[in-house]
Length: 187
Image 1 (tube, rainbow, N blue to C red):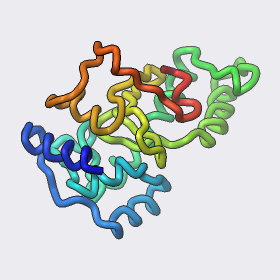
Image 2: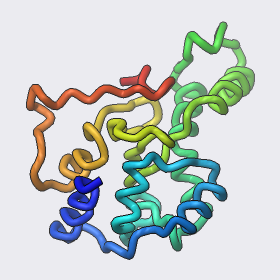
Image 3: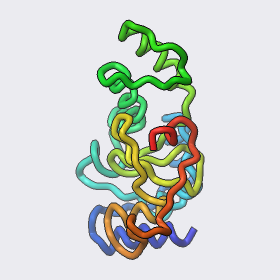
Image 4: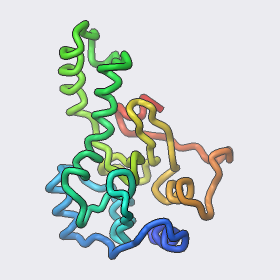
């Protein structure tokens, strides 16, 4: 996937983070087994070309090689925890979950049960995510249930977040389409 090698090269030219050698097949296998996720082919190709890291390990690039496992787990849990926050405090309720219980603990229990079945999201950078195992998917910015498109795909996301050549979000050709169940319903 040459465009993803180009995206890594763009990051290097922009000097916005430190690039370390890309993840190896063994490292991908270790990360996927440890955290129970599968990187999409485009995300995998990007991280195999170079692993971006920076000093802000909680809000920046996830360091899949040397990162604190608790921080990586928090980044992976962020999308679901954000939905739970909105269920608890902001009246969010998915009609597919059935009738909304009156008591907050009951609402949270039902929401947790349903959220355990939604496709996991894998952090790209901060609260920008790709769905596990779905290549070519738009990058999503996830903050509780405020979810927006942040890139047509991973390569476009690098342009949108960090600069370089690419389409503007105001360009009529910039039309991302999310396919991942549950998460697409918030867009």
